[in-house]
Image 1: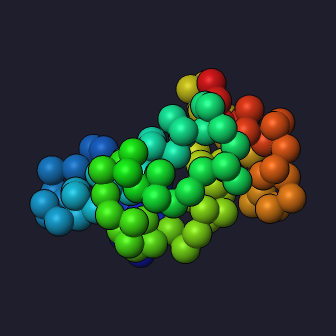
Image 2 (image 1 turned 90 degrees about the horizontal axis):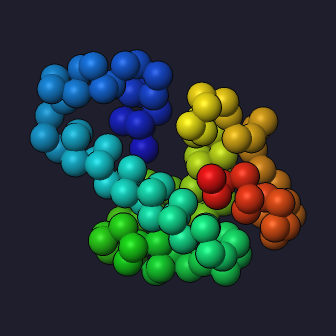
Length: 111
């Protein structure tokens, strides 16, 4: 987790070759979890997803999920902070748990 926060916004893609194999693997695993969640959110809301489903879709162990995110809400906040295809953020800050249950919340993640 510290790696991602350290590298966030530091031009990692341009310096990708300078990262160790282990660091590249960590970034790939984190991205796989984010991508798997995004894909699953296309058909269901976050409350209907389990960590097991997300981990299975990302092809990692359930415990690996918790190496990268404290819980599903932490994952949701990270997804909300990612820029969309137009370069704009999908959310303005942390998403309260009560809003994760609304269909409008899920629609922000589905392109």
